[in-house]
Image (cartoon, rainbow over all chains, first blue to last red; front, side, top):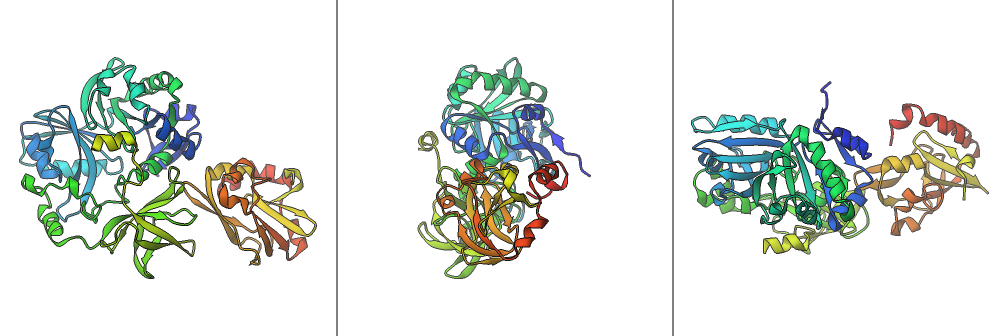
Length: 370
Length: 133
């Protein structure tokens, strides 16, 4: 039996009544008070998430940028010190090894945050690709804990101790002292709300969490679990690696062509991506909103005009829309918003409508994008 | 409405209340806590004949769908229409307003196989009680 791993915040999850589940080998809370309440907390106030299971990799050296350009779809030269960027790690078949956020802290110093379930594979893959580059890779995932502070009141909470963070733009990044220990903060998140992610030494994480809990009491801060993390990210149209994107599905098919920069020079799998861009995709990740009651689930089958068209990769009840929402790969890339499909749920054909993603994005983030 | 003490219980955490030839069925407080936030209930259609132990109703939380089993055989005579507007009633009031459906029992003697309140309380202390929902 494989033993489960615990984050530095495990005891804190127990203290706050977290319902612990096995999440890709990590013991993490799926909820504390309830998914709906926690979802609402993040949409209206501020929530704290333990994301310490995520992986952190430092990439340093004279050829750090060249190496990242080769191993990423996005153009990493677009970020200078103090900026972060969302990107995909392509494989050599046109699929995706992982999605990640890269922060730049100097010409020779980059910091990668990758998914927990893919960390070992990512690190081995990157090490293999690093042959011949003057670059050092360091997997520091055990050294760091990580807390996501998310919601319309997140910046108000952060401002009390870290006013400089509030001055950063969306996808800004900085190294800073976090309550006496060296840390990193990025103005990023996975909820569709304003906020930031704090990365600090593992043993220091509980102190930071408890400090934010007491500082934010008047703002209504609550601990939030993986359950609402999933409903929030799906409403915001963010991909879940392993479900919505993987080794078999490309960035273009996922509707994330904006992270592929074909004009930046060579990168792994570029020929596959270029071909796909030129020829168009045969299947596409499409957003669906249920038109009747019910809850769609990953794996449910979708049909268009009575013909099987694909299956749902992510699906849930959307608390904000009070309706079932889903994304799934349909072999009908031509479908436009408003088109009707049917989702088979417990033997019932339930009508759904193609909608543009995100399903929901806070006005703060909409403004930040504009 | 029924006090838990006057109901009978299944190992899959349904309760059934018998009165005047009608069996009202719901999920126990233990079950609603395990299921968590209930956002959708699909009850059986009136007129449907169900067997004891047959999955005939779906209760869905944000995270997952749960089958609800008929505690006894019979014909479905009613479904709780109020749940269509507000499924969370099952969380708030599992043994009263949050009932799921009513049955006309096929074999009145069948209820003898079910647990009474005290037996169900004892059952909740066992590992088997936590294997299902």
